[in-house]
Structure formats: structure tokens, C-alpha cells
Amino acid sequence: MATDPKHLSLDFAKGTLVPSTSTTRTLKDLQDFFADTQTAQAVLKSGSNPIIYEVFESLQPPDPGNLDIGTTILYPGRIGSEFYMTKGHYHIKEDSSEIYVGLAGDGVILLQSRSGNPRWIRMGAGDIVVVPHKWGHRAVNVGQGRLIFFFIYPAEAGHDYESIQKQGFSKLVVEKNNTFEVVDNPRFTRKG
Ligand code: S6P
Ligand code: ZN
Image (cartoon, rainbow, N blue to C red; front, top):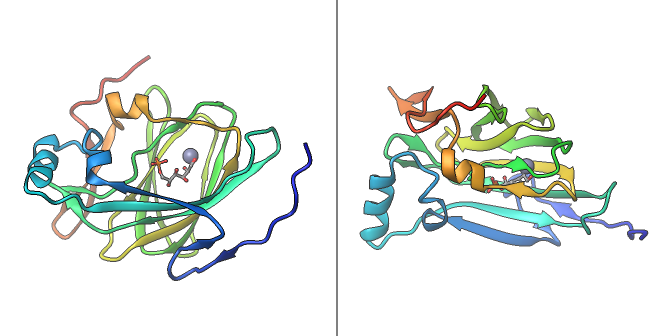
């Protein structure tokens, strides 16, 4: 079915997209994703449930050729030594790649193949990260301010969060000596 042309407006500084639908992810949504589950539980038990990130999306029907676009605003902070991050996912339709365009802040995009082969790419304003098909991807905010980026990917891609929830990424991005370090995730078991 033909889709009508659309016009949207993106605020580069704030990361808001109009019109769009928004999703807010809090620590409660991310508690199984951070490596230091004890600290995550302790923060929640203390009655605090910080916002980790917000996503503004313009979604199309999931038909071949359609593209979804949007922005992510990832707040600064840490759970234990691990920086605030998105859940991360693989695309269910495996031939779906994705483009991230950095708009503000200081981030790291963690990528990995299904077998756990890791890569990481620094992303700030003006940086573009190409996520090739089959690569799992997660954004991590290693800066003091908000990490804001624009994304575009096939509307039929689908998101596999379960694999990440169960196993995590093979690498963690943690704070060390006022900067970041990429270290092995002790919980990760390599496949294949
Ligand atoms: C979707 C794309 C981004 C993420 C967003 C939040 O394919 O990669 O829009 O959805 O950055 O991350 P996550 O892992 O919670 O979907
Ligand atoms: Zn994606």
C-alpha cells in the first residue's frame, strides 16, 4: 500500500521529534540489563526509579521498503561503575541494518555479532555509525550531558531484546579514572 509523504521537525539541541510517539525507559525497565544487579535493586528499593532514556519515533507500517526514524535521548549516569545505556537488541529480520547520527553528547555504540564478537565506536555530534545487518547494538552515554542521536532503519526490522536480557553484551562500558573503559562481561558466555 502506498504511504503518504510526511514532514517532521527535529530539534537538534533537545532531540525532540514532532510529530512522534515517545517511550520512556526507567531503571525498572533496565534492571536485568545492567551488570551490577545488586546496585540496581538497591536504587529501586530506596524508592528512586531514574529515567535512563527516552525514544521519539515516527513508525511506518512494517512493510518492505518502509523506514522508521526517530531520536534517542540517553541521560548521563551510572549503575555501579556501568554507564547508563539502552537495552540493546538484534534486529529480528536479520538483513536489517541501521544508521545512527550523533547530535549531542559523548557516547559509545557497542556492537556485537551473535557469537559475541565485539566492536565499539565513539559517537558524538556529527558522528555517523553504520550498524550492519546481524550486529547487535547498544548506545552508552560516557559523557556528563545527554547523549542524543537520530536513527533510521527498516520498519520491518523487529527487535530481539530477549537474547540481550538473558546474556548481555560480551563487553561492558564502565567508568575508570574519570574516563571510560570497555571490559569483559563476566556473565557473558560465548556461543559458536
Ligand atoms: C531501533 C534503534 C533505536 C533504539 C533506541 C533504544 O532499531 O536501534 O531506536 O530502539 O535507541 O534502544 P533499545 O535497545 O531500547 O531499543
Ligand atoms: Zn536497532
